[in-house]
Amino acid sequence: MSDENIEVDYVIDATHLSWVDEKLVDDLYKFIEDKTGAIVAKDGKKILIGFPSDEKLNKRTIKTYVKRFLYKYELLDRLRVISTGPEEYMIHKLKDVEVKNL
Image 1 (cartoon, rainbow, N blue to C red):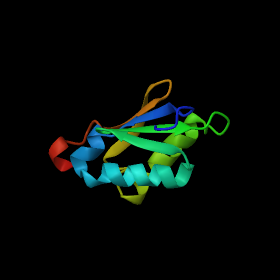
Image 2 (image 1 turned 45 degrees about the vertical axis):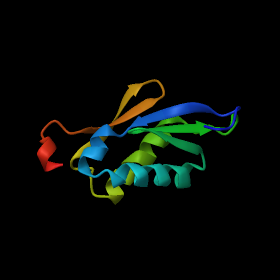
Image 3 (image 1 turned 90 degrees about the vertical axis):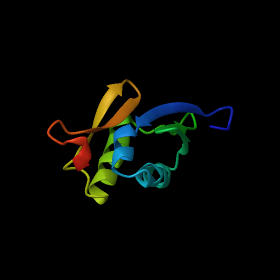
């Protein structure tokens, strides 16, 4: 977030996604950037999304884009998107899925 007028609006924690493949976090970064047109940055396993003040997408739209990404890479049967805060999502493994089977 290099611009001084851009703040972090949403955070996506992709720790569980990196358990499948480290490259997927970078792919999600590019996917979100392309779909939303937002300023996107990475901080470790977290993806930070910021919008100019008047162009912010709603939270549900961000979740839909993350779910589309999981569908595109055929991961919806192993991972899901859950809300962990007012402006934060986490890609989390399903209960019945073992980490070694991701």
